[in-house]
Amino acid sequence: MLFCWRGEYCPSILGFMSKTVSEIVIFERDETSRRVISEAVQAEELEAVRFSDDDSEDVQIYLCAPGMTPPDDLKLSDSDVFVKPLRLGRLLDRIRRHRRNQSSEARNVLIKIGPYDLDADNNLLGTIRLTEKETAILELLHARKGRSMSRQELLDSVWGYAEGVETHTLETHIYRLRQKIEKDAATPEILLTDESGYKLGKI
Image (cartoon, rainbow, N blue to C red; front, side, top):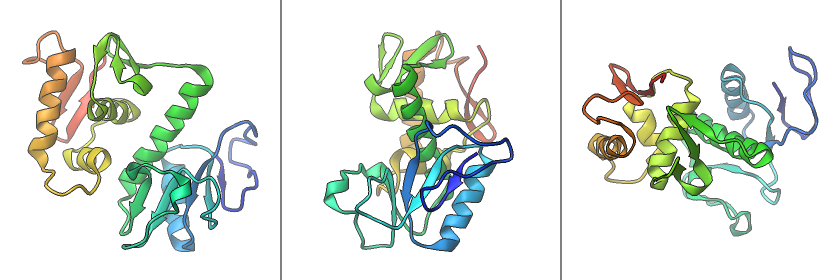
């Protein structure tokens, strides 16, 4: 893995990574926060994450204190701006999405979801048209590699800190998504529920 704070390339326990790996640049000035995030990134086996304290740089993710906003010229989406206190799980999921997007752009690889191919850029699962939220849910669950994701984690990752978002909002989206993708929504095989939350089935 690659963890760099100043832009240099660093060795990992597996040797040296190729310099062709695209970095995900996170704006964060606090050293303690950087250390905590780096440890979490390493535990999740994510790659090529670099921190910057220069908000004029082309950063993909911006961490800030309440009341602060990133410069307009960064043109970041709301999902890329994290207001402290930070929810680490949501940040890691956002890093995963950036990495998948970079991989898809580089190799034109589609994500396999059950019998379908997910084209996240166009919100298509095979020929099935998805909403952005439905696409995000499937991407997040796919990244878990068969492990469950709690309802609260999904809410935080997909809807962020939006007011008025409750568990039933997620359940409604899951219900509609199953209607679209399952042969029988009453006995799902792709989008499963267990005691921990939701996960993708192995079919």
